[in-house]
Length: 346
Image (cartoon, rainbow, N blue to C red; front, side):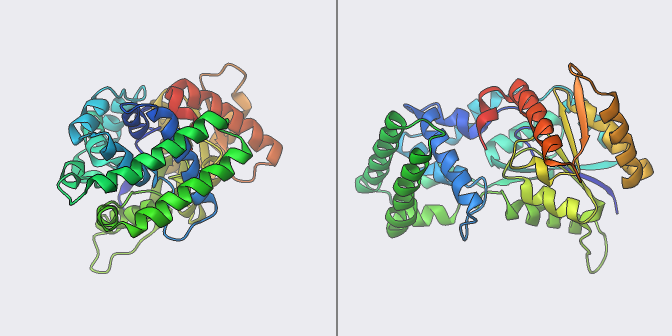
C-alpha cells in the first residue's frame, strides 16, 4: 500500500470557512449562517436519517439563491482565503517523499479546487461538494418559490433578535422553525426538491466513502481491498469525526489538528499549533517506526511541553476525562488563533 494522507481542507489547510464568508455577502448573513450551523450540529448529533454533518452547505443554498449569489462570488471569496502557515511547504515535502496527498473536503467545489491548486494538490486528488450554482438559476423557480425562502429568512432573523446563540430555548426554537422549513415546506416544493437532489455534501459518512474510494484507487489489485489501517487522515471538526473514527478504530493514524469537541475524542493524536509543518514529526514516526513507537514519541513530547509551547502533541487514546478536558482547551486556544471567527463553528 502506498503512503496515503488525506486532509480535510477548512481548518487544517486553510483557516477560512468559505460558506460562512459567503453568507456575509447577504444582509445579516453571518448570523443566519450561525443559526443554520447550530441546526446542522443538532441534526448531526441526533443522527437524523439521511443527514450528515456539514449539510449546512446544502441548507444555505436557498438563501444564497434568494440573494443572487453566483459561482463567481464563491471564487472571489475563496481568493481571499489564506493558507495555514507551512501548508504549502509541508505538502511539497510529502510529495517529494512519495506520499500520495489527497483532500477530502465538505467545501463547495469552487473553493476546494481553488485552494487545492494553491496548496499544490491536483484537483483530481480532491473529493468535495459538487455545487453547480449558476445552473440552478435556470431551474423553473418562480416568485412563490423564493417567497417561502424569504419567509424562513424572516423567521430566522426573529430568532436572532430574541435568543442568544447558545440558549437552550433558542435551540428548541431553531429546531421547530427549521424542521418546518426544510423537512416540510421545501420537501413539498417540486422546484427546490429538484435542486436539492443535485447537492450531495461531502461530510460525515460521505467522507468515509470518499476515503474508501481513494484506498481502492491505490490498492492496485483486481479485487481492491480497503485497509483503513494504512491510511493517515487529518481533520478538525464535526464533518470529520466519522472519518477519524474509522481510521483510528482500524489501527490507522487519525490526526486531529486544532480540533473542536466533536472531533478531538475520535483521533489517535492531537496536534495544536499554528504551523502545519509540525505534523511532520508525527508522520515520520508513524511511517518509519509504526504505531507503538509513535505513541512513545508523542508521550515524550507531552512530558517536554510547558505552558507557552509553540505546539502541543497529545496521544488521545486512553486519556482520562480531566486530561481530555485540558487538551480540548489547548486546541480551542490554537483553533481561535488560526481560524478566527470560524473557530466557533461546529
